[in-house]
Image (cartoon, rainbow, N blue to C red; front, side, top):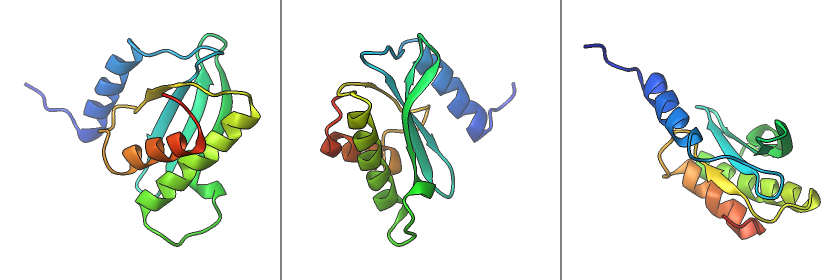
Length: 117
């Protein structure tokens, strides 16, 4: 019996979630990618295969604060980019990560910014 690495297990969870969650033009999918250094998020229309809005920690420009605080700022930045694109509602795709820590902070920041999911 083979054991999965952390990355393989996360990708397996992500594929399972993607079978159930899909984004449309009216309600795009909020995708989260978390690395060791930072966090990225984008709103994707899966029917057209297009990214409608995106935000990442590299665009914030400030290195102070914890990674959790950075994730909350990325969520707020994504919400403002979504507002400019005319998007108010989305579905959340946590990308196989646990809804805890930085992923949860990003979601709460996006909700504070006005996104509904």
